[in-house]
Amino acid sequence: MTTHYDIIPDIHADIDRLTQTLSTLGYVSDREVWGHPEGRIAAFLGDFIDMGRANRAVLTLVRTMRDQGNAVAIMGNHELNALLYHQPGLNADGTDDGYMRAHSDKNRAQHQTFLDEFPVGHADTAEMLEWFLTLPLFLDLGGLRLVHACWDDVRIETILARRPSGLLAQDDLQEIALEDDASCFAEAVLTTLKGPEAELPTPYFFHDIKGHKRTGLRLKWWQSGAMTWRDAALSVPDPAVLPGTPIEGEVAFRAYDAEAKPVFFGHYKRLGSPAIDAPNAVCLDYPRVTCAYKWAGEHQLDPKNLILID
Image 1 (cartoon, helix red, strand yellow):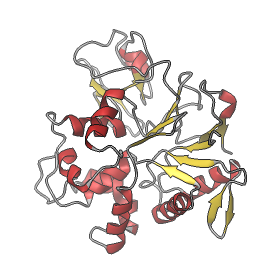
Image 2 (cartoon, rainbow, N blue to C red):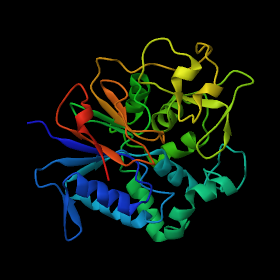
Image 3 (tube, one colour):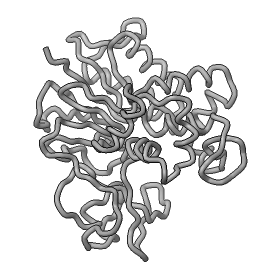
């Protein structure tokens, strides 16, 4: 019998968004334990923390659901960032502040709401970080796949060659933190959690949703065929500012196989209205429009199963 899953994207410490999503999908709470009367399983795509101010409440709810067998969950890039931020070691920024993710103003601001509830060095923080390491980088659940940002078969195999469980180990963190180009494992982990990127040709750039100037472009890895920079653009408010020329150069880009099983992902902070991206791929991360997908075993994704949350 096929297990039916309700796929839920990035929560970012917003407990109201989470509980409203669960309620809309038919989950009920019995003494703070959320379950579905029809036995459906919630499938969380990572990024439980930061931005919102209910980190502890969100994490407690998700952990309880998973412990009770009512949910599965994977790691997002914000959970990885937290592991590195709180871990003593060297960072890729070249600053000697003693942590694997630099405690810069920018990084601290991004992580501040988590720090308000889980300070550096606190016992509760250490325990939560240990739980983050129980979150797999991806899940293949038979009829569907879950990943936070990018499913690329070559990178998935690279990760599995070292970690057959799909779980990171403490010993992996320093290698990942340094973002060493020579480390295929680190590159595979970072692309899986952050997505593939390519540098725009000079002099092109764009401003992201937060107004930051960027020259690195996230790519629509689930699309096949030749694409221009403009066609491939992800999370670019105004793609018209990008070149309409074909993508060229050394770009680590492999399209998701059109015959592969459905893959669900978040991460990209999409604009507009939620929609199916390809017959077998959909991004569910729309910060301005809460959504989820009710998967019932179909190989071709059905727009009717893409649920908009009031």
